[in-house]
Image 1 (cartoon, rainbow, N blue to C red):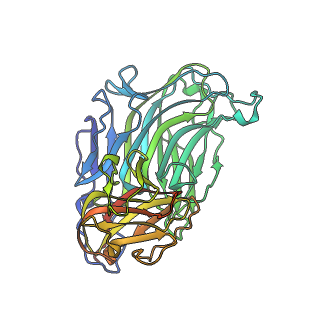
Image 2: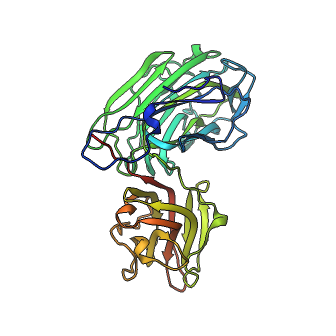
Image 3: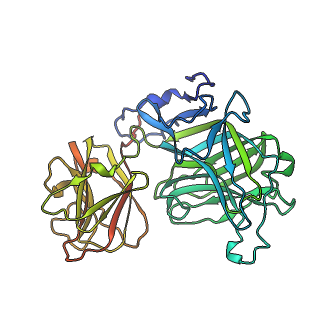
Length: 441
């Protein structure tokens, strides 16, 4: 193991296998040795830093989201001088409140453990909404921890694991914890393995240590797992889960605490300290999500481009409308092992909806992958022409190295729609390039 000083603002432990990125010749071999790294955050810098943590060229962690709420505070640290403060404003009944901290694990993983100390406010009280006259406003579930990849939401995500706390049936004001899985297009609904309290009224004014281990199941197997610990004791453990997702069986985003549907009658403040995230068997070996800043889009084939490109999802997506042909600088050397991965959603079918590569400003059909459209002639490579135009997100993994090779300068996006008043859109997001991992015997 390699370790750094645990009292640094960020620290990690990395298994020796972490630095092995060079792909070996493809052979029928056992599964790769799991890669393992650990991120630790004690907030002793006195502020969050949005600088990414990079290990051997791979971005493995970064904070993101609204920097004003929560905040790093010296009011109530568990250890040292600082902790992260989550402040929920007081609201009337049936009015929500929110405080959440988002993070990314761009390397992606199907298995991780998250541990932290959480100070439960002295005035904690989980109110119910049974007395609210409007039944549509009777929501009292609050976010505790949410993990996902792709577009946020249980149904639209590639895969997800959400944990929410609900009012206890055994003690007024206390809370029990559920789990809510959403692998791809399947929503598993809320489940409560126990009625024990994740937050008991006796926890008020105390630091509580929480730990969760999440493992997504492998394809064709029911070996998914979830285990929660509270102060070192198992709170609940669930095994035999079949939550594999063919849309993208990994986590690369999450948030701590979050939206409170119940709201709080008084200002209620949590503090979080000593965060540790263990990531096992990470997915992507030499890439991060590809940023798509709008100001860098340029026309691809000037004679064709008459449409508009807009950025989406914090520069992780590009939305095309009209008759739009766009390109962006994305230098990459394609090898036989290169994979292009992304999410795609559209509505009204155009003539050509496609993504591809180019070195010039002229259409290269031999390096363009059609996803949908009424036109087949000159439409590019059609092996992935299978989007159903149902306004639902579809995840693509295209082994571009089986079709192309060499250096390419641009990534291209096409929504060809040569009609008088073109309608509809094409949205590409969560784009990655990476090299398939192969192993020796």
